[in-house]
Length: 384
Length: 222
Image (cartoon, rainbow over all chains, first blue to last red; front, side):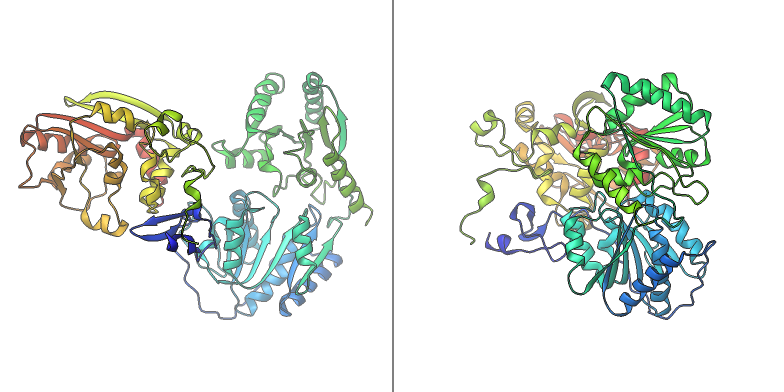
């Protein structure tokens, strides 16, 4: 028993006796037990030829920040990129990735959600045509080694003390946010330095990156230099919300623009769709448990649906041209925190040729979180 | 300080790790329940009773995602602490139903158990407090998950009755974790019957309708 209490898991650092089991007289950690699988082998670190293939050029501001990140990487400083939604955070990291590859370093790009990993895989593969890019996520772990490894944070356990450069996006997103286990595995996998990216970093992360050895670079404007659409709060009684929603959907249909309708929970998402679908044709719904979600989303991108009712599963990492956004029951403060609302609002107006969009918070009463989100977006817009 | 184990005072669920207290009637018998009611209901308990080749079969759960992941964590990740959860709530009833029976566990290949460090079927059904008889052994390591229905029925060729063990005139309870096509269970029961067992019943943890099994198998990591 003494042994059991003194046992500290070498992988996740757990020492809570609750999570420690005994197998044949030897303690083992039950907290990280599901992270079992093949570990990646280390590739020889040869400098690689890199050819960056971009269809567009970075703005001056983006170039400046990109160079700053590269300089920080050379000086061994961890960087936090604090940039608004749609600022082109991913593109900012290409410079430092290319630099690390030229030096023969091992590069990883970790994200909390698998949908985003898949999307990013194709973007990075296109941008780095000469390098071997692999995507690693649940049930897709056939190839673990490559020049650039794009992975979900859950797969970090396969790479202990592995990455010279680890880029992490959406660090404030579920399930990485506040998950001690994943954070411990992130620390374990990092050999060199990291670049963190977020539009809505938490206070803890900000204070961590304001300490020595860290740096914060900020980008307050979108790459197309148009203001971020400021959300509008529409207050309606519960019974009047659906007629309002329908009239809006009809309007978007006339001007031929796609629309996201956010619902707070899976149950409410399905319920809302069952009502809305009676009056507005050509829509669909998605949530984390919905089968065939990827197909529905890609159909939506191609214009197959007029509107999509969704939970916060699509709150980030999606770029759709000319998207309009309506958040229903936006006064559910537990689900719609200001950072979530900022992310949701950031879905609108992300394209150069469609920089505008409508964002509506539909609620019964205004909440602090809604006002904070609007204030933050308006503040960012003052930098234009 | 190794003197006192702090967590024995506040029992917690082995699956969700939340503190909970067992039903009072279970505590009356001095039993520890390792699983909270919420997690138990999530596992989807559904007792079924039917006849297969003349043998009575009882299954406790319908094999679906929740059970699949727990069983994988138990078998695949060797999380031995999960062993008592599968029968935690049914055990008192099963003890009454199967009084006087002798358990014959489904055979598993010896080297597999060595690699895992334990025999999962034995641990799972340990809580029934019945005598054990390892009457059947498996000759080869064959993985049925990837086989078709017809190939599965040939499992009998890989099974052997252990000489020197007597099941003569005994009431036998054959136990296994999963029942898919029932090929293993039926082959074993026929073997036991040929060697003189008086009454044979089958108890399995999860029941998989064949089609559902195929879908699940495709998702298995290995």
